[in-house]
Image (cartoon, rainbow, N blue to C red; front, side, top):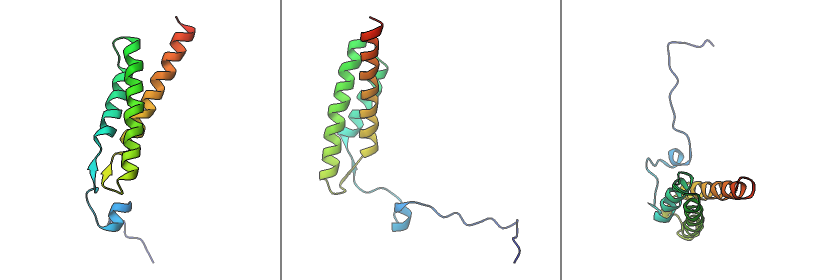
Amino acid sequence: MSYDHRQTPEIVPAGRMAREGRTKPEGKMSGLAIAAFVFGLLSLVRVQIYLGVFGAIAALAFGAGALENIAASNGQQRGRGWAIAGMVLGVIEIVWFAVYYLFFR
């Protein structure tokens, strides 16, 4: 049995959506998840150091609310990754603020 290099292998989409025959994710994107990501991102790109902390706290609050709503929605909402990303950015800002405040102030 020989391999013909002129033939290209068939590209098969991977993942759960492909196995189920869907092309688009189901459910509505959570607004809280998007808000968590935006506040987390804005907390890192701050004008003043204290505004970054308030943005980080907002990112954590919106992210926690989004994760709770997404879990309770039974697949009607999506955006878990956006919520987690916003919370991670918020935590990074809070840690950065603590390091700055403790060692460089």
